[in-house]
Image 1 (spheres, helix red, strand yellow):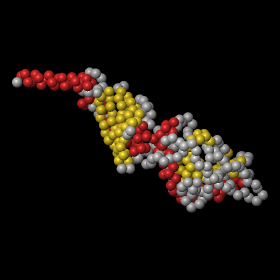
Image 2 (cartoon, one colour):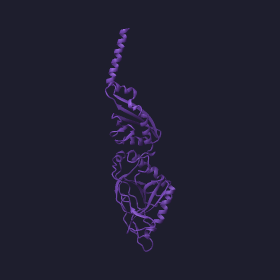
Image 3 (cartoon, one colour):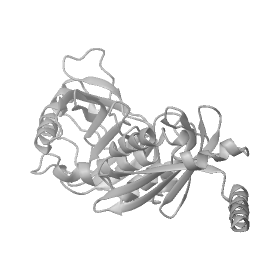
Image 4 (cartoon, one colour):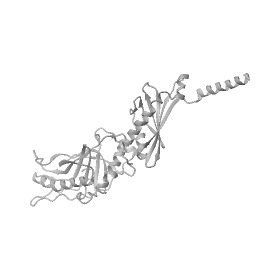
Length: 353
């Protein structure tokens, strides 16, 4: 009997010794979260996680993320300097996504360190906070995918711009009303100040105030800039590198068809914080037809102006641009009063609003 016990002990010790050397010295814990956002958008944002991202207090991404299939992993460091990985596994769940968040920590060679394989070590108390943080971040993304988005990257130059400013909610009726009023009123004010339209009607959207979109609606112009204006203002059209989309639908569909898709792309590339509108890129629209028709313009270009110093390589890597978009037919300039000859500019190239 004693001999059998000795043999069992030897086998147990041999197994423990083999396990000590053969089992990977990694402590790991995982938690799964449900995200009501398209799986492709979720996967793209996780795969673009930049170094320096704080997952939760005590866990910081220390290098570039890598993706293979539905799995994304990135190296992390812990508060005490220990190293490890965060691993995301993304699977579709209806119209949303299911994300398994897994934290790993490399262990030392001592038996006490290896005990953390069983207990979870430092990752055990961190996984819940990490999963909550990831869920909050991903849930702020637009509920949209950038699949099917067609855009070009271009450079535009600034031009003199006469405009009036107003704010509205995001309803198609409010937006169309502002554009209609601007189309009726602005040309007359410009003629009074000896300014000639030198381009198509534009709506620049520089900021969001109290959840309302604030527009600068007007025309590029030629002529001597007035020193003072009772109505309207003068300035410059946006300039620099832009992402441009040509849109041929109605006002009611422009947000889901263009803005949500572009915002999802920028959010996935970590070039725009989806949780706030305060850091949104400046956008503007150029109308190539009658924007006052029922349902609004049916042919417009929409521009996202790249902020100064921003590298869009992650955007173009996630969803490459096309080489060219169809050239839109410019709308007619507003009629000039009797005795005045309107400017006759040639049709501007799509990249120069």
